Length: 327
Ligand SMILES: [Zn+2]
Image 1 (cartoon, rainbow, N blue to C red):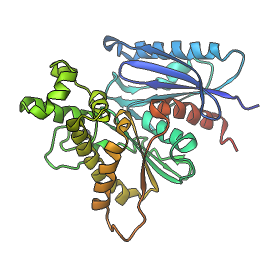
Image 2: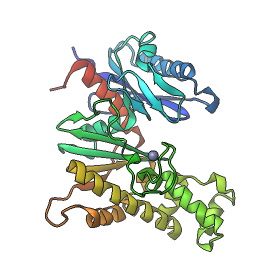
Image 3: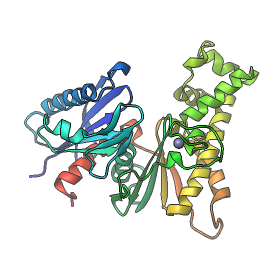
Image 4: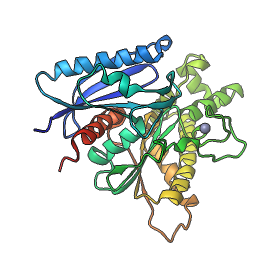
């Protein structure tokens, strides 16, 4: 008999979140643990993952667990077992699946978090019924996932979809990947914060509302805070989001030229700005689209599953890999 539940784990820079996910993509039980900055060593994070998985297995009672899916922000090798590189964790060629499998009695699959998210949005969220989907997650940086005809496209080495590092501005801002002018330097939470900082540095009066929100402590300003200020009508924050949205549209036009998908799903924390971000993105997209006016245009929509997309997708992808398609 097919197991009804799978476990999804979402690993961030400072936390491990986990959930029991049923066959319809509902999270029936949740738990999380913080992983303090000093505890980024692989063994500490792995220990935390095992704790979370064990707790979730106990809360599932006697029900069998189909599989455990781990979604991590990083490069995951095509074997779905090894984390090649994770910028926010100290994982370099880390054999995560092997390390965990010794301690967990259910099949384990590791995936890039945006790959997990595109799967979740396609099966249960904004992209249901679409055959060619590209997911763009806007957090501190940009994550990407590609799904074509019901399959996540991982590339030859597992690292496809790192859209954030497409160069959009030659000689532009330096990126942590080592290059300059990467898309995520212009269309992400970090870009919002950098632009707000430059307004502060210029002593611009138009940034006073934002500065008040952090009581003058410039270092406390974050992407989510700017997004929140924009939603509450702060004109400067709206402007910053429109600028990021504009850059988002430029990159999406590039992706349309390369992949011609039917839909772009925009997720991640910055997507909470919704139309404040998407309207300028659509406008720039239309202006930059190759062959505009003579081709169908992909839809650009906001993600539906919020910050649980990675967890839900990791669980369901793992179940899919362990048991095969549901139908
Ligand atoms: Zn880069």
